Image (cartoon, rainbow, N blue to C red; front, top):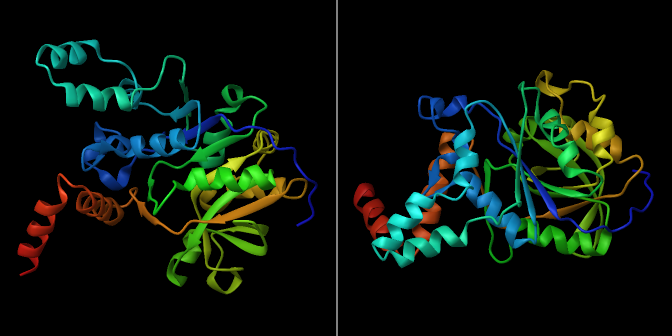
Length: 297
């Protein structure tokens, strides 16, 4: 991969593609966006936003679709609810709402009017992102880190290397043909050089078992490439194809995430996330552990 160094500019904005129809969760997703389904008591989208905020992101950009207005409502103030909780002296619940409430001007929403793929969704955010590097978080991928969050760790790598950063983790041979796979090179601090990326390769053609897991730091030049990116795997505009083109002129580095990742776009991953997060909490862990033990008897 031949590339020239890219200046290190701060990453202040994050893009969250939330326009998908969520057909795998019908009938639940007919009226409720799949990103608003809850893992324990928090919507899936909130986990990604929390991860971004922890990493220092200041502006949260949501690429939505039709019937996704409830996502915007979720990140808005609800004075009636706040007043009711205050009147009832529900200080703990008020603290929860305040903890996750973005400040005025921190959220932006734009529409992806047709389901043309992840690359197209990112392109739809071009005017809001502007000429800055940005983080891209796929909300379906809920991360449970052992220490700092995945994006926070990527920011640490970025502060040293600059360029573009892609989070990866190991995947099974059977899943490789459905994932974006990277070809790893030499180490660079807590990261490594990415020599190339392949979208959904056949197992025999895969350069490694390291899959792209839904977290990116990307330079804004990607928008010029997405402008005329041809459709790729699945007949959609793939972000990986545009990133591969960008890699001919810019550096790419990988960060290997070692926590747990739950694909909440699948029923199995969504259930696993609920069990894992519930077991890890002091308020729900003991009871859920008892319920599981009784069910296994």
